[in-house]
Image 1 (tube, rainbow, N blue to C red):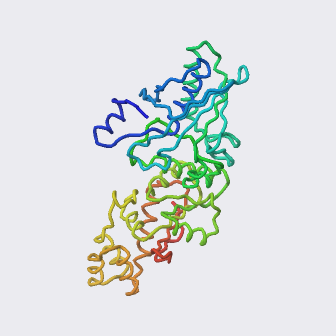
Image 2 (image 1 turned 180 degrees about the vertical axis):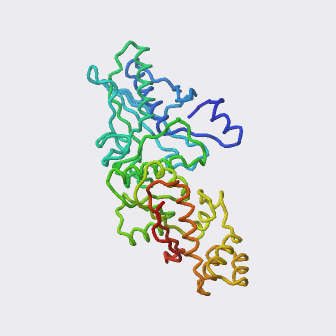
Image 3 (image 1 turned 135 degrees about the vertical axis):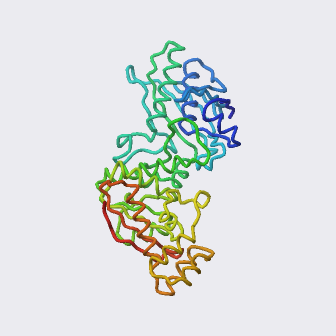
Length: 374
């Protein structure tokens, strides 16, 4: 794929040494524009230029060009730049056919693109998982080509992603009720390296789906082990489990605006000790375990001075909690209470009750804070 976007956010990223990439929505738009051009004019534009929401005009090389009676298919290989995106290298295809007069642009899910099966998402049940902004981009591209050729722009656009059904198993889609493949995503068309925007968006959509399903209790888990622990503890269904990862802040801030009556935060002791210290991003590269803070919490929990000093010198958070457990000092419970306090502060009085469970690497509960509301 060739693309030249020197200005705006993409240009800023390049100057910082990070190479931006392109969303599946941008790739699908380029493919759809190329396919419709070929359907009307008999030849594929290669590269094909599109206009993104902020005015950038990237050009995409085509990896697939197929023209047959009544249809045209173009494909673009997604380049996620320096972002570790699950769809990097995926082939996004668009097949365009003439539609019924007055139908406008109708979207279809081809192989590897999912279909919405649960309420709560920004698309109705039964619709292809092509998000609103990519739909707008594709409609605008189709309208541009229609004007060029004097056509009505009534088309059926079928989007597919090679291997998309397998790739979707590594995303939130099955839990969100998007079955059969990936979603066509993107709000700006540009993938910002390491922004984790797709993960954060999935957290928000997970909350939306849980609310639409009528769940009154959701759980944010930092990983697979903590998810198993909290699911077993409360018998929560899969669509009430939020794959929070390191993004505690994303869960809390979205729940502040879209509350669910009860939230359980469950995670490894080290990560939740960072939440207890006020960090909302729990990634090891963006926040660190503060053993001095843990020592202060140990003193609050009743640790004598010598034990608190050993906690301050501990190599890991796990060692700190083990030292306290051996001495009968409930450091885990104290950390859980402070993590709950920080969570409630972020929720700012939203009608959400919070409890916290801290676990070790084996999944054993080492600290707990009971439900508390605003």
